[in-house]
Image 1 (tube, rainbow, N blue to C red):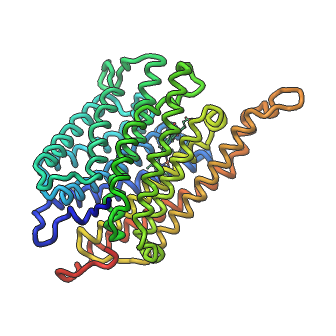
Image 2 (image 1 turned 180 degrees about the horizontal axis):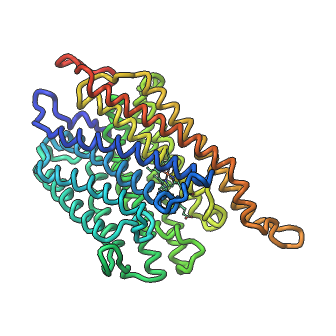
Length: 482
Ligand code: HEM
Ligand code: HEM
């Protein structure tokens, strides 16, 4: 059974008056925050390779800039890009304008204000010290309020839709809206002490379990499900092909959301968490390969008949590499969830390599592909510098390979040298710092790979700036590459 996204998209003649202004706002914020977040990534990569880059100031040390990087790339870049795609595609898929324009704007400005508040408080050292949930409680309250505004507008738009069928992308978006709300509220429950300080209501092991149930599902429902929704909408549109198997996309959705939510304990292997709970996390993580690879294959097979265009069209190139990295990181993740493998990988740069093959390879590349497709479509202009899009693609792809291969090599070296024993059964490398020093060449390679990725993103920003300010295509003309 095959179903085309274009089957549910209005023709220009019947197209309702969609709110494109909100899409353009989120689009612009995505590009700006993406470049800022990646720049901070390169700075902290440099700090790990070359200590003086910490500048000797408390506000600019690695410990404070690291959460700034993660919050900027995940919630500012990742969040804004997902909102861009959702506001653009859901109006078309449901053939209706967003339910309430004011709510859309409160969502936009509220989210940007939260990002600015994070960018001020994190360098000041104001933090709850929980990874991906560092922000202090007043900002957590603001996130909840803005999310409720978004959710009300989202579901009201679903309710007033002009088509009965809800395309699979909408299901992926719905799981994102609901699950992130639940995760954020449950993990952020604290007792405020002052304006900047609070005490978590959980303690010890319960705190760790709730945190990693949240942390893992932040990956699953912030960096995966909404991006899969984007893949199911924008890949068929960019390739001008129907989704390979609509039935597989539905199985992909239900299996993924059912399995993901149980996998959190793979972050707590060899901890005080009861063995059965660790095993549960491991087994569910391994089962996750099936829906993940089903989705990857569905994405790649959608290109059947369009592979000749992949050689020349940078948008499709970005998307193919993104889907391939999705497949790679969702194979690596389950392997790392196996206790024995995790014993080697945990605490090492291998985890950082895994994170960035997912983040740069999957999240970054599918976003770039979508943004290049969208800029021409919503501003109705051809790209100002089409060849730059190709240069960006190669810079990013080679940059990711350098980054991740360096981290995998560094991680394996660390893991093996930490546990190596000499003939007498003593530690072969008793001085921990010796191993840390041996990491340096790999850390410099990461600076190189990360800088290439950043330069590509800056080129994209300039290209978009010139495109948006350039002359629009003649009325009714089909923009090249779209
Ligand atoms: C120019 C590109 C980037 C560079 C150079 C970079 C660099 C870094 C560095 C140096 C760290 C700290 C590693 C450590 O503590 O040992 C880090 C952590 C992290 N980065 Fe990036 N990054 C980049 C882009 C991104 C993007 C686009 C995303 C997400 C979409 C991302 C997500 C993360 C996450 C989630 C962590 C925390 C990993 C963990 O705790 O295991 N990064 N990054
Ligand atoms: C089937 C899918 C996946 C599974 C089973 C999985 C499993 C894992 C495991 C076992 C770890 C290491 C935990 C540790 O030892 O501390 C990990 C870390 C991580 N993974 Fe994945 N992974 C998957 C897919 C992905 C994808 C697609 C992304 C990014 C888009 C991603 C992002 C991360 C991040 C950010 C961390 C670091 C968390 C932290 O310690 O701060 N994972 N994952």
